[in-house]
Length: 166
Image (cartoon, rainbow, N blue to C red; front, side, top):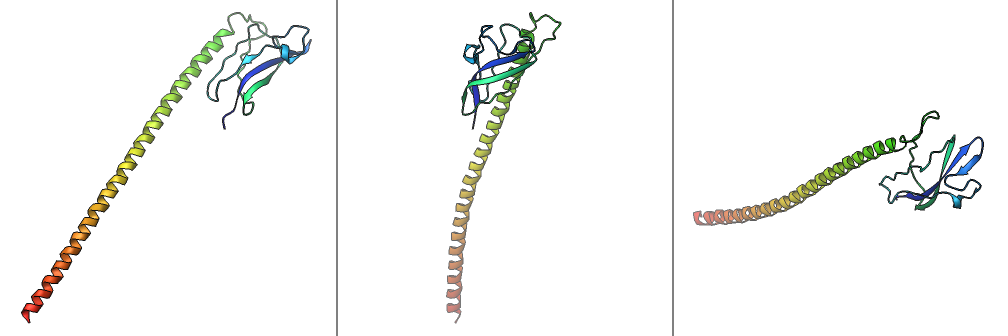
């Protein structure tokens, strides 16, 4: 059964401050004060989330807040080296990833369409086979009935021929 996470919060770790909730006030340590990220709308769509401000962290925790059936998600994290500037870098990997995901989704849709068309052709061919089999069985039944009638007529003619020869 399909399952996915519809919203989540991010927690990050730094050696200086320990675990902090992303988007919470600096003195707030409650999850409810943290920024709420939107997750997926279904089991197959892809959801992208970019952090409005960069975070220098050594560890991340993703906390599912709301979900369907069970919390489930896949995460891809893009990291910027400590010495480089995060301005402009955050959107480039996301844009490239979005383009790759869109391409993969189009390919999957095309594949699904072709598989469905193939299945429809198979069903149509099987329906034709069943119809043809029925027609052939009816023709065979007619031919056997005619053969039985012809055999009966032949037997009658033989009997009549024998009677006349006596």
